[in-house]
Length: 640
Image 1 (cartoon, rainbow, N blue to C red):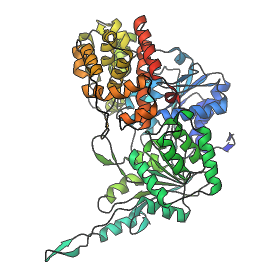
Image 2: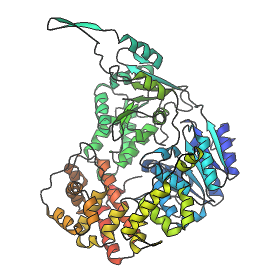
Image 3: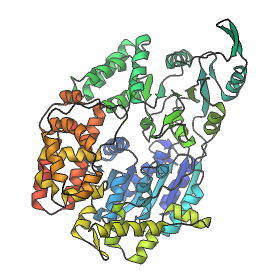
Image 4: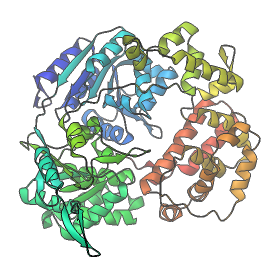
């Protein structure tokens, strides 16, 4: 079968056949095998049938990229996008959105859902994500029965259980399509400072030799100890790959600062581009660069390193600059790209080689080795279909610290199943009470994947006890009376994070005592997630702090749950931007990266829009619109 100039593999044909039968489909296939073509077929089919399709992605960057791709393919009248801060053509036939937006539309019974035929869940294994997995699970649970799912993922060991769960709660056939053979075979190696590129078996032999002691004389005494072995250098690995003609490489580094540091280090000793390529890079750079940011230091830095064939890509970079890096990499003009793991989520940017600075990462609590699915998601970017006969995954190996047996285990096979992270939220409980009777609520709550698995294994489930505890709390706080939502409860149904804190401030009129700038400061402080090592300008004038604290002091709940330190940190930054300050000067007020500032302001916009959609209070609407006007500036809008 031919589609879009490609001869489809059997697994792609099988998936398409399932779509034609109006079944849901779970596609479990290795990275780089062409799962995207199946999604493209579904979109193409339903556009021709004049039916609606929704495409959801786990991260906003992937949503933006897919929107650009689909708009170019089908035209801007056919395609729309909905994220927290961007809404374009929301009545389109094909709507690209984050999974959070889709879930929120389901809970509020948005009319768009009535005309929906198919929803595509790209990277469905994100349902296992500790922080956001509930969103994905609720998106399946709350979808109406007429909607069919195309769920795409790298290898899912428990695909059969996952498909059976969907079939059980949705009462329709769910087909499983498996394909584990990569179009470009992937080989796994480690890089040692002394021995170079070796496989795991050889590294085990090398490690065994390290057990033999040497003898050093310390203070006249013979002392036996193991020799010190220096960790390998990323520059040596890239230079070896260059000699072997195994570039371009994506070099994954789980630190933004380390990405930029390593790019600088490499550029001091290597220049990978010809004079013609340099001219092409500068032309693309200047053509895509937004005028509002052209004088910034980050632009100069990126222009300098990309002209040498080296790039960086992480969440701290401005969206416009990330787009330029992606364009240059896609055009084959970057030979080495230092990136954090978000680069591997869905974005179709393969390289001949994928490198790892380390196979451990900090997960917010401690450092741990990668899970097998994390490793294969990243390593799977190695090997370009139709270009390479083999792809290489190579990790720097520190013989002093790294555990070769653990590394062997998670790099040999993807063994991580999809698991449930289902957790009840205030928003979910309020929307359930608002739209369902008691028996429906119990049925819905017992539809989660964890409950399904526990029932199969006869394990105890306490989902209803959790629900009843939340219900009691919401009644005590005045969000529910009996079995009905109060006005405050209805307000909170459209607030999707920090529901109680936002509702207590904006429904109970605390906001009336605050200026537009102070409202933006307060929202920023609620949304801000603390990061290690971030510095903020010292608060010189405490007028806004005293005013905000005095305004919220009448609410015990707000006083207990509001982080005063966050307010202190946010005042200089948000005040500067809300009152017309420029972006360059903003960067002097904290050590937050440029992209983090953009993300902060977009989160404020998202929260303000949620408040706007939650109320009919004219005074609040007027104030929210003024707050939005103060935040929405050109540099915030640069995302496509």
